[in-house]
Length: 301
Image (tube, rainbow, N blue to C red; front, side):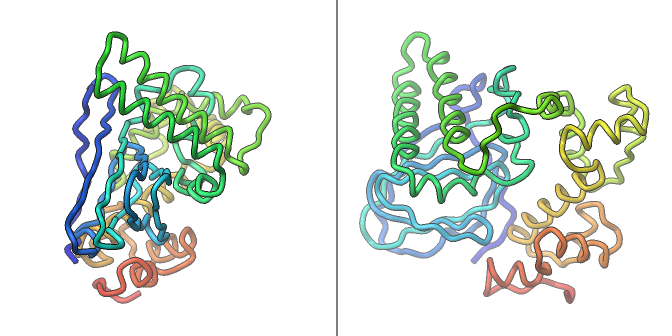
């Protein structure tokens, strides 16, 4: 299996809407896993029409059959394969969340930004809940029709349907039953420049003094404000994002632990091991054994 890095580029059907939906049809007979893990910033929804396939999202394996709907979170490495020699057909929907963060959706910024957990964790509920699955299916099909026909005003219709998809996830999520969004979480969008700044500079040394100045806040006020809004400290947020990037590198690049540690901005390899184990409850080597049993990684762990 080839493990070259693959940050999949999504070619939008409409650049303003940052969206693409198409039908995939596979009639070939081989049933091996696709050659490369891939990931992308866009959310991904799959709607199964005919045949069956398996999808692995990091260390979780799922089987998809006709009528199933599946969601993959932003930047989550995943890989698929056919399960038999029969014809396979399904719809794939990709869209970037950014254009859809209006004031109402921004109230749930933390949820849809997957700060606490990936949206992929909802797939068990989607599989079990017929009403949730039916709503998602109906919305995906409407999106497909609108983007195929491009009737007058389709941009408005598509924007509404994307929000309907997100609303369906939120309302059917049994683990998310807050009656009201706390004031601090409602202010999360104001930190968007900080989050973007961090994600672009994970390989560098990130100084909170620079970030607080960028936000026109004192060092201590920014530290307290970030923790109130995000639910974790600025340093912890950076560490989580670095380990998530390390996971993608482990899956998609054939490089050793020392280089991975350097590329995520952690010069001390022992510290990298400590953080990785704290967040994933396993070492990098154990992580790779679960996900790619046939591959080894450089440097001991």
